[in-house]
Image (cartoon, rainbow, N blue to C red; front, side, top):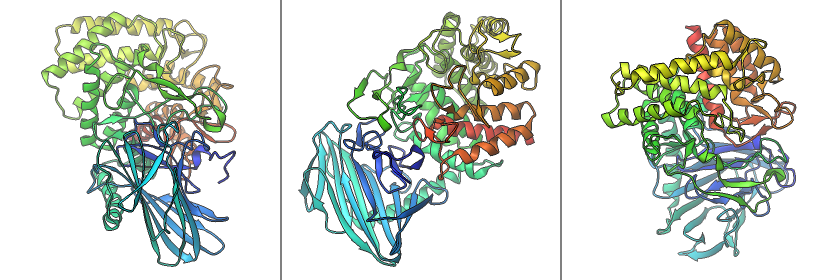
Length: 593
């Protein structure tokens, strides 16, 4: 791996997490992104966005080395083997759990085991709290260096890893490994409370127990389809994004990784989008992870209760309505600015949120679950609201500033009415307004078929009365709106593959994006699903086989990818990409019978 001006490639990172926060670990051993104490907090390490000011936790051999890595099988615990001219070592990185559940504090453990020969290792903890804006102070407490800024406290512990040298704003040392040697480094972070100083044997035990906990969680799935390794890795990546204290599902653990190097499409994805939450729940249902589905759907219902009968595009991970938006004084990944803390899209009208919510509600009930009367009434209220607003222009799935009658939004409105009527039939929603919902559903269909389909192109278009295309309409068959193997869906698939192609299996999101951003990976997995649902299983499989090697060496995907270099772009790892992989694999499995 080669850094450019201090920046590692996005694909050079692995992700570890405990369900409360996520750390990104570069192939060269540096932890360059970590929000503490939770995913929604400001960063403690943000060298990912500014190598000079952001802070990191570096651990690597001195001098030249080669590195290779893997996840411990069926876990989110990372192993990296460093090889030098004099020997080799293995580093195991984990955000630890206690018997599979969260600790009262955040604990980051890095175990260093000597394999062959002798390797001189160097480590340095450089906390830069609050996006590098806060003054870091490090003081000795009971012989342990403790960094602090504001209410966040970070204890730094080292066992058999050299005598820590303490400066005003960093802690570090060097040490020598030998065959069979074992050193351990640990960070313990807390907020507004006593400083935890864990014992070595407890940290060692938790590292091993964390591996066992991840395996137990994955043992609960019942997926029996193609590409099980890729699906398992995607499931584990999605689990990192589920905020365990309350069940919120973050879109990604990072902010402001660019969709184009040097560009300004850099956004904070550490929020729970209704769209992504709904899609993720769908993927978890495919995997049979029912307990997590219940937890996260419960969070979604609690969040939308605050804005009932309206549905915001996304909510903060604690369920509150996002209000913050700051541009941070950071360099930005490879000078891609601005760096944003917060997201301005929370106030947009995105009609797709209604369809996503009701689709998820229907899937939840089809799993054998029931709604209480209050939940049924709340969902009915949202549908009554949709009756009033579905004819409005909105920002669409892509959160665009130009308000239009986006086809995917109208398809989602049809889905919302359709699933609401199905839930009435199941006795889950009150049916006193069902006749109106049926009329509105039929009106939406008429609108889409007459104004959002181009006879000239033989395809559903980007928005009403347009000739432009949008890859998201590939989801029409999944929604049940279009006949999967019908003429209109076949024409749409053909037109999207031709006009939005970024080479091979890759697609741009919509017309005119070739010079603006990379290819959007989820769109390619939507294509796989559309092909599978159309009965074109051979094409679906071939497309999937082309997409799987585009992940990084750990099986992780970002939001986008450079079509020429295959460099990963955008926030990482990206939930929408991984969940789309899962549902695409599930569609192929279903088509295979």
